[in-house]
Amino acid sequence: MTTLNPQVAKRAGRKEWIALSILCLPLMFASMDVAVLFFAAPAIAADLKPNATQQLWIFDVYGFILAGMLLTMGAIGDRIGRKRLLIIGTVGFALSSLFAAYAQSAESLIIARGILGIAGSTLMPSSLALIRVMFQDPAQRTKAMSIWSAVMASGVTLGPIIGGVLLNSFSWGSVFLINIPAMALLLIIAPFLLPESRSETRSPIDVQSSLLVLTSVLPLTYGVKTLAEDGWAVLPFVMLVAGMLSAIVFVRRQLRIPNPLLDIRTLMERRIGGSILVNFIAMFALMASSLVNTQFLQSVLGYSPFVASLWSVLPSVAVGAAAPIAAKLSQTYGRPRIITAGIFLAAIGFVVLTQVHLEGFSPLVIVLVGAGLIAAGIVSVMTLVTDYVVGVAPVDRAGAVGGLIETSSELGGAFGIALLGCLLAAVYRNSVSSLLPKGLTPEAAHAAEQTIAGASSAASHLPAEAASRVMNASREAFVTSMHTTCLVAGAILVLAAVITVVLLRDKKTDIEAAASSRA
Image 1 (cartoon, rainbow, N blue to C red):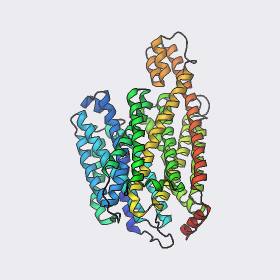
Image 2: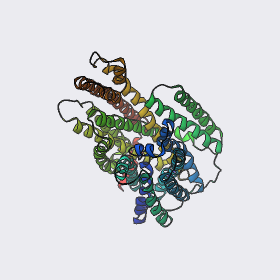
Image 3: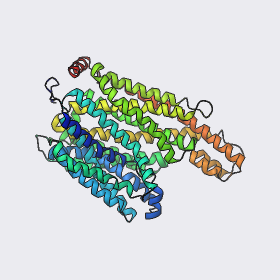
Image 4: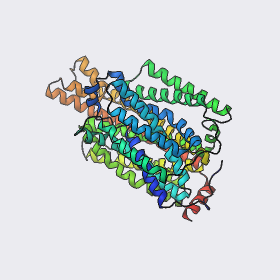
């Protein structure tokens, strides 16, 4: 494995920082598209009249395809040129956004969202690889990565809010049309500001490996997400098993062929493999926090989705400050120490969430403080992990490594929602049954015992006093399940801190890296 010598690394100038700002703009819109349809669902349903299955795919196909194509697109960028792939993907993203905005049927919107996912998968690994090339100085690259991570996190947060604002004045197609100006700006400026870079070895893409990635990531993501949302069912379980088997075949093939899509042996190096694992756990915890807090704001405090999303913006302020601070501190104390500190900060955030109660000090304030600590800690971790893995990777594999990092993030988020979502639901069901008032009809009791949304639906058909008691019981049960889920998430983060200390720690390298960064 070859790395750049920090002592002789070229320092980036104004051109590179301007190029980074241009790279971040389409990146934000690509990450926004994961959640931008949250508020558009009613308008799309009224206009296109999708059935339940079609509606599921309208929302999910973008994220599924994105996760399945990241690794392949990163490898393609290494071979044909990262800037070239970025420009091709930008054109595809703009055209598919136009196609989606004027879709005349549910089927055409699903196809458009799928193409958007393919185009979006070119933007993330290409931008990471270009940052690796443009910012050779370790300190500057870490700062650039902190900006990149903050933009990614902000895009996911801002997606629902921007969608809600647009839908107040325009049709649902507007949530796609806003992508086009950003992509047009990138197409105009990118040829002049972005450098071209590609691998020196121009080996062909292994098509079989690319298909194995798709048949691994897509079923895994679909399986865990569907099981979390809808509970036990045969199809998502079969998909989950099929994805795992395909992943095993993929790994065996990468170890066998001379030019693998993913160098598995590189992952066996403890600091690189450990960093990818820490990144997976970090996204696992971040999505769990989002799941818990979103439901609390809407189902317990009773905010509308739009108002809840506005409150959710506040923790992103902490993200904007945390990423550059973590980058700066890592130059003095080394990445492993600051990654460990970021993990513990997020764990403290989960402990704060266990102090949320319906009575006493404002639960909204506690939720926002806890969410801010979690977001600040996790984004700091992801910034430094991404910077480290991309920094030590060979330049000719930067795109593939960038795709691997993003794939681990997508899978971590899917598993976080699935596993901790199941825990949240299980504890709720176990708690609410003993709190519900006596005398409910079997149908009302069953609905209230499933979810807090079911309790709200059941309460709407009851007399005022009984409805109040049902809702109070469901809110109390949800808070109990929230506490348990946050404790488990915090414990998982403590495990991640142990992994960081054991696998990422290298005292000599840390001291040398910190010294070279300060120099």
